[in-house]
Length: 139
Image 1 (cartoon, helix red, strand yellow):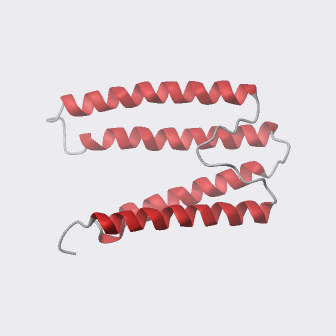
Image 2: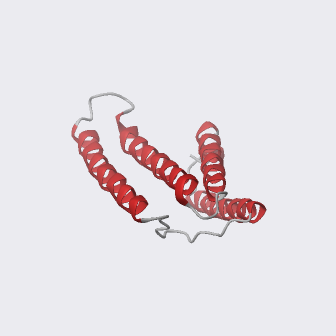
């Protein structure tokens, strides 16, 4: 491909959102698990809520620090621009693992955690696919 086409990247993002929605719908339907709303706080109990907010606050601080460190130390190395993305990736991983653990331990429907882990593994697989194919040669 000769250049960068933002329209193609937008279409890829739209397709990814649809694929994630379909996967979540199918896996939750197969397991008989209630569908979760996007961008909502679905805490299992009060302890989960406190732990989740603790993780969020810690990672906001880490993210701000990593951004500051990345932008002030440009001569450190070639991979210094990846530090904020690494922090975001670790946050998403830990947040979903915390959700899966709390669902396994405390949820009424014990299959909730299986759906959460399946969605997490699917997301990791898609991310690795996108990175290894350079976003399907769009970048």
